[in-house]
Image 1 (cartoon, rainbow, N blue to C red):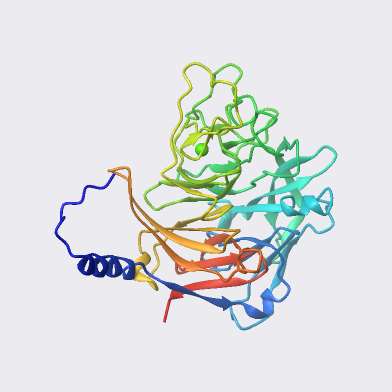
Image 2 (image 1 turned 60 degrees about the horizontal axis):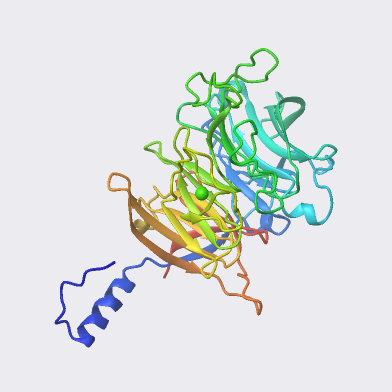
Amino acid sequence: MHTVKAPFLTLAASLAFLTAAAAEAPKIQLTPAFEKVAMTVERPISVVIPPDGSNRLFLVQQRGKILVLPKDESSGDAKVFLDFTDRKMEANEQAKFEEGLLGLAFAPDFAKSGKFYVCYSQQDLKRSVYSEFTVSKDDPNKADIKSERILLEVPQPFWNHNSGNLLFGPDGYLYLALGDGGKRDDVTRTAQNLFMLNGKVLRIDPSKPSGSRGYTVPQDNPFVGKDGMRDEIWAYGLRNPWGIAFDEDGTFWLADVGQDVWEEIDLIEKGGNYGWSFREGARPFPLRTDAPPTGFTYIEPIHEYPHSDGISITGGFVYRGEKVPALKGAYIYGDWGFGRIWALKYDKKAKKVISNDLIYEAARDTKGKGLMKPNAFCEDQNKEILVLDWGGKILRVEAAK
Ligand SMILES: [Ca+2]
């Protein structure tokens, strides 16, 4: 509750104060980029830059093509780096919504090893496949499809909530985010089950196979050596992570898509339980009526918003660019359904949200759906923000004129 310490402010003075406060919220505009390429882009998932100094932007599309975007933004000459359109990734039309090619990460030593990692869906049995590939020896803009080495296959009970986000952390290990495996209400009770990989963040070292596994589990993972618990797990109690990022100080940001009422932002810690499906946002999940086990502890989200403000969170990253000074240090995220973008400033020491400004709002259709659906926020070579619109557009964030 707020304590008002200036009770004698006139109404006019209060209104002037509120107007001034509101005016401080930075406003942005979205400028189309790579327009000729975007004409054929479908369901962009992410833009990833390999750590090899080439400054190339790789655009991942859910239907299976990864493109190397042209250096000249006005050109339509994108190179097809990888094409999975023949891999029968989706069960049916409905499943295309959340199945497909879902993530790409380049190895930290990509410049030398040429290795990269993807997550994609497969059927019969329905599963998420995590594979390593190597770039072609003849063409740096082509993947060597024959080089596939499958690291991990995780059964998916339903077509939704696969997540598929993956990235390397500052420690050089590969972090994989997995959704709870779907339908709704966490029906298969995966997210709290430490013997299952769904509803988790995993942490592995893919550069070293060990025994029957195509990777090594770092010995400081929180559940190493514990009976009935998978040692790949780094954190758990997640529903459908959509947007993960490490800030330059090592803070691990994750946006977890909610079910009926609350969308949330989490800071992921080693061994942390983020509550699903006993919790949705910072409250008990009412459709789960069984009691949590004795000793159940969880980490609250640092921020949540209700479905009156949006219906599906898309996580971004902490902005470290130059073009929009007012956003420096803010976590940029949005809502896929309503077409909104926010900038959230968080004081890590005080564990407090300092501000959460709505900085962009898309026009809506007659049903209230945003006409721009932010599906990902990605950093370009200059740490500036690219917004990937589900409808196929690649947009740059600029200060509003
Ligand atoms: Ca949670």
